[in-house]
Amino acid sequence: MAAEVNQTKTWWKEAVVYQIYPRSFKDSNGDGIGDLNGITEKMDYLKELGIDVIWLSPVYESPNDDNGYDISNYQGIMKEFGTMDDYDRMLAAAHERGIKIVMDLVVNHTSDEHPWFVESRSSKENPYRDYYIWREGKDGKAPNNWESCFSGSTWEYDETTQMYYLHLFSKKQPDLNWDNPVVREEVFRMMDWWCQKGIDGFRMDVISMISKVPGLPDGTPKENGLADPSPYVCHGPHEHEYLQEMNRKVLSKYDLLTVGECAGVTIEEAKKYANLDNSELNMVFQFEHTSLDCKNGKWSDDKIDLVELKEVMSKWQTELMGKAWNSLYWCNHDQPRMLSRMGDDSPEYREISAKMLATCLHMMQGTPYVYQGEELGMTNMPFQSLEELRDIESINAYHDLVGRNVADHETMMRYIRCKGRDNARTPMQWDDSEQAGFTTGTPWIEVNPNYTEINAKEQVEREDSVFHYYQKLIRLRHQNEIIVYGDYELLLADHPALYVYTRTLGEEKLLVICNFSKEAQEMELPEAWKDQEAEVLIANYEDVQISNTMKLRSYEAMVLRNC
Ligand code: GLC
Ligand code: CA
Image (cartoon, rainbow, N blue to C red; front, side):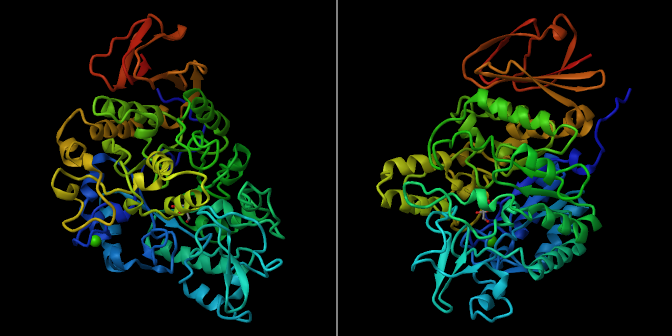
């Protein structure tokens, strides 16, 4: 009996997305850098995992100040990654297997090497001048006190015209001026070009920052004299107007998956971005749950508290239900590995806790995103020295904080080992041969030494691996409407170690139980589940015993279905 679904059904609600960070995925030509032909080579691996969509981190021409998030040509492919022919072959290989491709759209800023910016900086009269945000200095200093996401001022002085340009990220990432209608037209035309090519969607990089508060006012300074610009740059006055225009002119003409990376997004804002009326985007990435361990500033090695995590996740689950659509993720290229952060990456509990975390996320409502290597239980990297790092954010933060004596070398390396973005960017571990089978050359960033134990080849061959567990979770989502559309309800909100929730669709119910601790836990089944027959849909231990008082082992997870 099919129950009423309280949502319009669409493919992107039912899909599972896999994020590829191309630089670290698979190198096909031995230069140590992952590339498009490498992705094509591994398409069958992704098919076997069962994902529906690939989100491709940027592959456009770029000087790589921020690994491709600084684009110098939106309609060309980064040389290290291959050619447009390679791209077309990859797209065809994906489509042949029923896999869709979502492109990363980085249009809050370009590279300073983009021809638009080269023109823009050349003179005040240049037709491209207003493509970017130029201001006069104030008393010989920057126009305001905003701090860049990558440390230091958001303003760079430019000798040629003796003015400053705005860059919320690195100085090689000047912000585009979205208030200029010509800029919007250029961006929309470029998006349309990709859609015509047959791509299946966009992940929109820091899209919540495209509209800035006029006057660009100073913020409240921190101890270093600089201020967080978020209140003036996130969800600014024309944000939704510009996205609606984008939707009318481009998105609505195609059948796409669109997801906006929305730093600082609240529930109220998310309901606008991802409204079910389809006037803007399909869904957003929110950052509340990945910020829970960064409360005392950006860099810390605090742990995520489970009660807080449950509160945040549940708020998003229940408040968007029937009003907007959630995205679900633990990991991406900007986050440390969730397994090291929330699970247990010791050899003894690595696999069991990776499966537990996966169960917890993949049984929720929303579109799940799997980040490359997550499906193998890849872990953080034991970085020891600055020389091993490649990420501009970590390197700049190190120099800034160590330079100002806010942190010493050891403290900073400890933070970076916990939170640094390079943790997620070490090469994909394909097998136990040299360099984890990622490259025959020298990788651009070192391979995690644990590749001899953690690698795809071993896991694809072994039935009880993390890989096969993800495969099963994905299959279950495809086969059970309740996992996609069912209502969510949190139980035991205050329990410090257990994350327990139900999903409900008509008469059908799921009970999801996850023990986030190494310690055994006892749990009374909810009344409705006592003395009832239940089917174990999936579990991370083999011999699950259902009883009114459940005894849960270290990191045990299971999903029960009422019969
Ligand atoms: C987004 C990307 C990140 C990048 C930044 C600037 O947050 O995910 O990797 O550094 O935007 O483009
Ligand atoms: Ca290569």
